[in-house]
Length: 232
Figure 1 (spheres, rainbow, N blue to C red):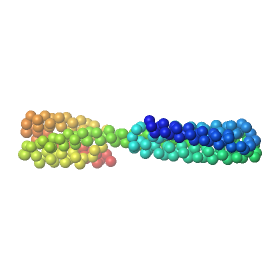
Figure 2 (figure 1 turned 60 degrees about the horizontal axis):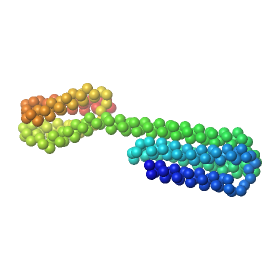
Figure 3 (figure 1 turned 90 degrees about the vertical axis):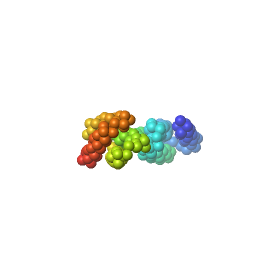
Figure 4 (figure 1 turned 90 degrees about the horizontal axis):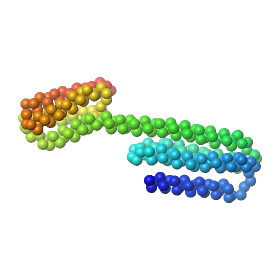
């Protein structure tokens, strides 16, 4: 919120400074309409920075989102720079000769159109990158949880005859590909069911059942890893 307010204040100060310079500095203008329109388009260029700032840095309050937003903000700054330069050129020329009204309208509108297209396409890329990042986070959820669960079980696991097998299972899970996909849904459901049975057997000290579930889950983990490799 503070950054938004600071940016709004800076933007307002820039518009005020530009307005004062534009209207207070005494210089002639052959066409009053061109003079006024040129000012309006310059203010539009300033005001558009509020939109690019919001889309770039305020939609999501994460550092990664802000980094991805830099290209959008850069498009806005480039547009502002070119628009101000165009405004100054038209104003200076209009001081000596009457600039045709259509030029004073077409040039700023074309610049605004290109800037809008640049912002829209860059924002679309930003949103797609963020969507893919969110998808990866979501897709690693299953294995990440399983790793955490097994790590806590490993600390308390003290049945020596199955200690080596349990460690092997833990290592297989720990080093398996974390990213899930649609082809792994069924096998991950099976792994989840086996994990519940394994945990129940461990808590009940049913070591025969525990060994059986360790073996089954190890096979499922290895099968999942094989499917992950084949799908790439």
